[in-house]
Length: 403
Figure (tube, rainbow, N blue to C red):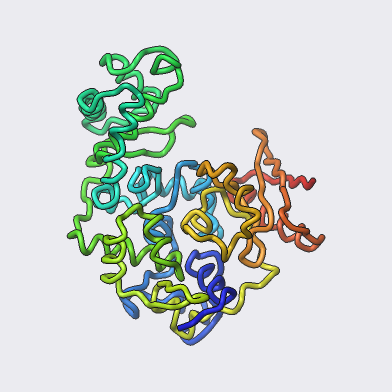
């Protein structure tokens, strides 16, 4: 199948759960009829049922970047219409998903039972690179391993400690310095590295915040029944989930997203039962149903469709090549200096047209919008409606300010 850019973008937006596919054979006709906007896994084994919970959304994606909690909560919530931030946070407390460092050395939200095998499958390369980081910090492997043992002992038996409490435990063991900071510069970098190392090793994971501070638990206690697939099954699973949620996408996108070797990425794709398409001459992959089935053949993305996406959303972050969604001249604005910090975006018709930044600590949220292209009055109204949905999600009215 050959796709033009507009058709590929429409299908990608559907895969990303940012638009509902058009009605077609099997579409729902009433409240008592099962929702068939997305095919069921019983009908199509390579597809996932339409997400209706936090666990469903996270499983659909396989992993969602989550270094910023507020951003990933909105990433999940905007794909669950009618949900609130409290709903999503409550689901994390129920362990529908868990935050850890499964790939690229970065925090992601992953299905709870899959956290361990994902760490084992994709975390090895990050661990291998930890030696250079330890050398920079003046930290030996023996001391790092000792820190993991100390944290494991402190958390055993259902313990749950804040990051500052973890640093205090490490300070009392003589592993880091005491006081406000935990190294000579008082920056906390050493303590953060040790917490990362413990999670990367699969000993700890990140639990929901308590009193506004990140907490840490033992992974084996937080998720006592992990799934344990064989390596080929694990490669196929992560490939299937990535291309279901991001397709059509290229092998290079998948390799960058997972941090897998090119050989492992190709093996996962071969085992995943994916459909192949060509977009402007480039080979790409996706879920067979979302790419080919008649009910999932999407109309072109309407230019009037406006979304307010958080920073770090998979819409942009999940790809090496972002040209379908983002003009080359705007890339530096979205990721200033290429530092990996993605700005929140306003998306019109599937393309980035502005960034937004929230502020305010009272009963309302002030949002400053920075247009990247000319926005007509109607576009601005639609952007304000999209940002209003974010306000409803957080239960804090939004005041939009334009330049």
